[in-house]
Image 1 (tube, rainbow, N blue to C red):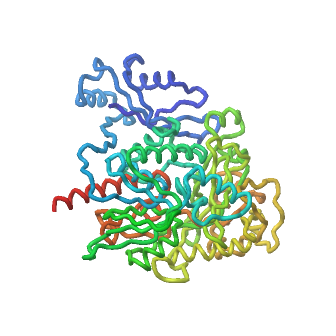
Image 2: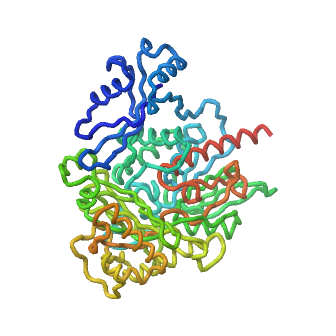
Image 3: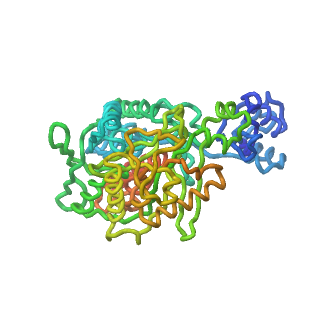
Length: 553
């Protein structure tokens, strides 16, 4: 297969026919000699606002009369073109062979129905192993009702909320599928194809910044669950992990215990995947203090959400000329910004939500945190993004692997008090001036799911965080004009960017207790929907491989 990189077409000129003709021109053939053309990636080059371009990576198969009958002759043809943007591509898709899988003598258990747990259970179910997937929260349909009630009334369900429930924390987000993990192309494409199979638009297969939107994710998550059940698996909602029992000789896992709607559930198994998510703090404490699983602190970041009008972001990144036309083609503009502070800390934008909402994403009584969310049409008036600062071990007041968790909790409690249970909010101008009595909102009006109160946010934050956020916002305004607008709104606290804990696992993906498989974002091995799903797939593969190896022992 011939791969063409950096194939650029002005956005107002693009069509499928235009793309085919451009490919033919670059390859020096007639368009009718292109047998197959597949877009692998499409990104946007907006460096020149009056000449914004689509940049494509495409795979092309030409007629044998042009390139010859096999890969060697195709490579020779590419060499003659003398174009470094044209290469031979021999990557193969991820193929999981289910035909040789033998039944387990027990039932594998997957804890957590976020992307990691769902994809792990999906693979195990397709292998015919009939996994039991347990989830402390509700099914996605019931969960939506519970979360909307929380936004309206402030009544929190500690086990089913923005963080917990079918689909995981990503269900109430922008549904971003882009990831920074390297060398996992076949796995990433498998995840994207699976999302497409279960209802996502085809565009996610090639967009450089694919997203689904919370409204579409609800449908897709439901469809994946139904496939697991169709394959013989079970999915138990409102069912919380409460502990384990080990084998009599202490060699590994023997039983998983959980509390369901009708009482205690005991599942005899030697295989349990922990896909518990980054907010399962009570479960981290259980695993560490009751079962001694080896854990360590891991890097994470915390900060605030900033809101601007989406129109301002669009103008800054696309330019004012033909702006409406650009937005129709490209969608609302998004950004990704980073800055290294004078004290050496990093500050960066995280989970940017074009046309989105700031949402109250709390999961514990008396503590408050926020996140960003967009629907698939990204049509709200505001853009929002977290502006977060890296947190170091020396910032913690306690020792041990759960110290970062306690650091998060302390700030969440302070923000809950400052907002009287609602989201604390402050104009950036007041934040910058460190005003003890912040003013009301200005030109930029809040777009929030839940309720918000004006508060002196700066005084709540540790000095290093407040200073870094201000320095970052000022630096970002050099890239995006108006980013440091005094009326921009800051909301907090953004504390759940990733897990502050890593549950250690060996080369077999097992924890210090044999048969327990820590996986995904909560266990410290992923960061986002796609990477969590990839880790779920890999964990399922490891579980199967370990099983076969031990059968042969």
